[in-house]
Length: 78
Image 1: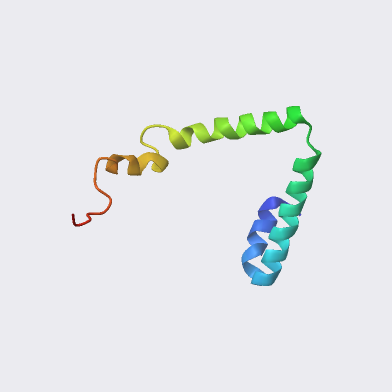
Image 2: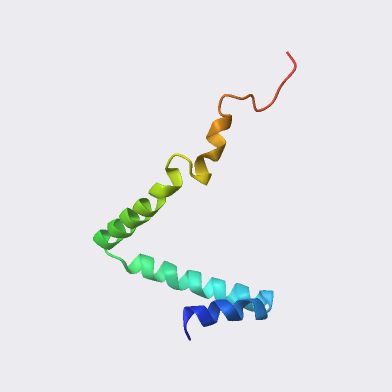
């Protein structure tokens, strides 16, 4: 079964079945993660960091709230 087919089938499944699938997928990912060598782990972290760079670039949605840094969050009476 292809990824596209799995994703299309998910909405038709019960919540219980979707949770079972998510749990199984997470366990497989964790097993694979634990089997990686230190070099493989470093490579994955490097790729994740490179992917996240765009999230922290000026004008990104992640930084949109930084425009509010100079504003008071709450006004407390003195």
